[in-house]
Image 1 (spheres, one colour):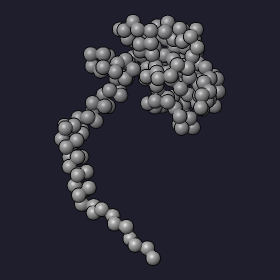
Image 2: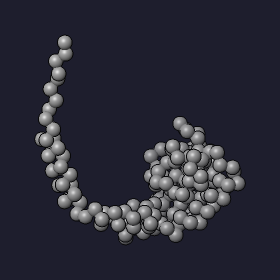
Image 3: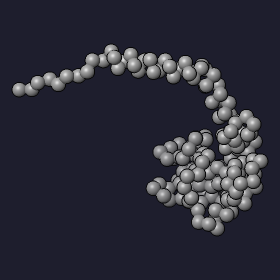
Image 4: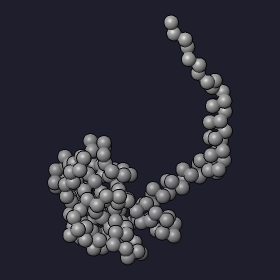
Length: 160
């Protein structure tokens, strides 16, 4: 199972991998970070144990992209620190094969390639089912306004 974002709090789920699309923190020293920037599409780094505020195994994977920026198309995957090494490597290898064909394309999704095609499709379907966002926003504002006017302000009750 692939979950959006870090795996924090979900390490107990079997064969679950956190899928981190944006990189706000540099976890690797410069020589190892250079290895990430040299990955070819469909390649991953070795799996390593990361112990920040919580322990987990992680690896970087480059998805197919047309950009030549050093970290373009790079995602970080996280798995439980409790997984046996053989299972962990099999999981990392299977995701390395499965994810590149699912990479988004930039003419359909500005968050491509990290936003995977099935996720982009699900987002479009949900937006369609919600209807016009402006109408939804207007209805939410009206309901909030109505609720605030319907609830009288609370007055303190005198105590003896």
